[in-house]
Image 1 (cartoon, helix red, strand yellow):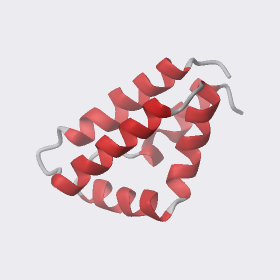
Image 2 (cartoon, rainbow, N blue to C red; image 1 turned 90 degrees about the vertical axis):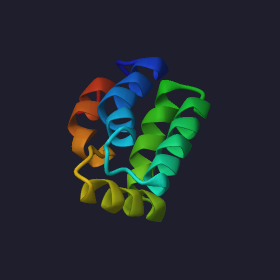
Image 3 (cartoon, helix red, strand yellow; image 1 turned 60 degrees about the vertical axis):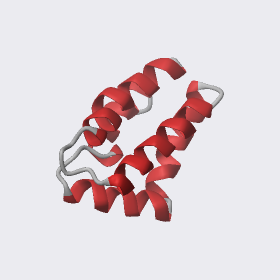
Length: 92
């Protein structure tokens, strides 16, 4: 793992969570999803757990629903930053 827990969360905050939350088309459902994701990320105990959460969130039914809602308003999603996230984690 190349990055710390804090670095991974900061990356996701700056590149996905905040831009999505502040998107003028983000409705209350999207804002709630962002807040829940933020809480879950901060509750992870290590960088490795943040990494695992990131990848599993995209594959869950809730993650897929979030992807559709967020991409429909043109905001960034986890899927949009996965290559950068993977590099930040030190994965090949």
